[in-house]
Structures are given as structure tokens and as C-alpha cells.
Figure 1 (cartoon, rainbow, N blue to C red):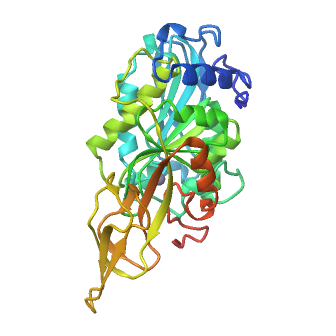
Figure 2: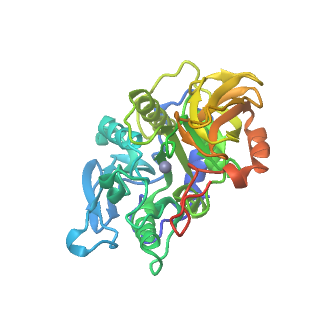
Length: 391
Ligand SMILES: [Zn+2]
């Protein structure tokens, strides 16, 4: 499942199959009670990492810069890429955040995880990119300056649109050096998500990864076409999306869950010795459905994120501000609110509540299949190539 890293001459690059075996061994066997002494010393010798024209020796933390080459050169905003090359062998875990420039929780998660790691005690390496879409970040928007959604253009193309070129540059220069990737997101456009992992559970190495995030919600989805997660997974790099909270805010509880989940994964992979404790360390697999509003107006919710609801329970009310007509939204099924719209003006068809039903991993795959076209979203709605919102 793991391919040899293109253009990577470092011994950090594991041959195909080796990391898969490694992930399999460590994640499945040690997710619940990992033992650091089983660190994979035979997998990879200590070696320098070569990335973005620099070398990072073992036991070193270094800040590099990635420039997409899509801005006016004199105004280019280089994107910081922080590399922690550990003292021992192990996987190269990549953490990316703010591919959507207004999604802030992940930025703090990456900072916190990198800050907590002691490179002298790290096995493998971490490549952290706290703000991938730095132009969107400066402007407080999800999109690139041309209104395109960067997360719909991977793995990119060197001769395509600005977004496609940027995606290609990032994918080639950074992502291809990863042996596993976690892309951090939040709900989009005034929606919020319970901390959750989105992953293509059909792929064994990805499914094994989802077992190691502690007590975290896991949803099966193959991922949007041309999303970073899907493109990386298709390139042989086991990848998941980690969703938490809402855009434009930094939310302490969401950030804490995200950092704890990633540190749990690193421990399970034998990368660190810092064990994080969970009351119940098991992942929780859900099948989910969106509940859409059928009438436009102002939405007020009666339920909260993470709440468990029963079939027929009132979820919220949409009130027409002119006619005063009210339309109640009821839960079509029992389950848990995994994602929801914040109170706002909505149009008919707006996806307002994502209700999850607890299930097994295999059932999550089967039940998601039939609605994957509609809701296999990282965050919907999205902009299409013309930049017109849809969904
Ligand atoms: Zn996002």
C-alpha cells in the first residue's frame, strides 16, 4: 500500500509494503495498549530528510518554506513547512491544515502536536504544514484568490489553472515525502462538526489508521474527487481527514480532541513515548445521513452538536422572516448529531443536520455506499470550476 517516495533519496522513504506491514503490526496490535519498546528499529536507519531543497539531519527540528510559484514572484507568500526528524526510524507522518484558509482549529492542532514532540525521542519524522492555503488564510476565506477550492484540485497539474498548479507543486514537493497523512479541516460555511475522522475504510492501511485515534468518531467516505486525502490515498499514502468544529474560530475543546487523537496515533505507531489516556479508547464507526431543510428562512436549532436524538424528535425550526410561516424539522431516524448548521439563513435543500447511527466498520462501508455521491463530502457545499457555489 505504501509506495516508494518519488524523488526521495533519503532512507526515510520506506519501500512499498514495508510501512503497510508496519502500520498493520503497530496499529492493530498496539492500538489499545501499545508498547514503545516494540519500536521498529529495523525499518529504517537514522537518516537525513531531503525536502524543499534542504536537508534535515536526525534529531533536528527545522523550518522550511514551500512556495507554490503561482503568485506574482515579488509578492509570493512562502508557506512554512516544519520538519521534525526524529532520532530513530519510523514513518514520515504529515499533518496539513488550513487547506481551506478559514479553518483555524487545525492550525493550532498542528502547532500543539509539533510543540509537544521531543525530536530526541521521536521515531520517524513529522512534516507539519499548519497553513497550506496561506492566501486564503490572510483573507479569511476558504478559497484561493481565484475563488477556487484548493481541496478539489489534487494531485494537480503543472500546466493547469492556478489552483491546479498550486496543488501539483504542494503534492510533488511535500506530500510525496509522506508515508501517512492527516489533513485537518472543520465544517464549512457556518457548519460545525463533532471531532471525526473521515477515511476510505475499503483500504486496509487506511482502515487500520482509523483504529488508532482513540475514542473518535469515524465515518467512511472515499473522499471528494481531487481532494488532498483522496489523491494522497490513491498515490499509495494512507490518508485521513480529521474534522473538528467550525470555520473562523479556534475552539479549545475541539483542538484538544484533535491533538490528543493525533498524539494517540503517533504513540500507536511507535513514534513517541507520550501516551494519552482515553476513558474508552475504541473508535466509534458511524453511518450517517444529512437532513436537508425543505423551506427557506432562518434556522434555529433545538439540538446541540454531539447530542443523541430519537426518531421524530424536533431538530430545529425554519422561520420565513416575511410570512412568519414556520417549518419544523424532525429527525428521520435515531442517532447522534455528528455535524450541523449553525443558526443562519438557509435556502431549501440546505444540509442542516448530519445524523450518525453507530455501526460496525463493515456496515459503515456498506451503508455509506448508496449516498456517497451526495454526501461523500469533506465539507459541502463546494465551489465548482467556475467558482459558483452548489449544494
Ligand atoms: Zn475544509
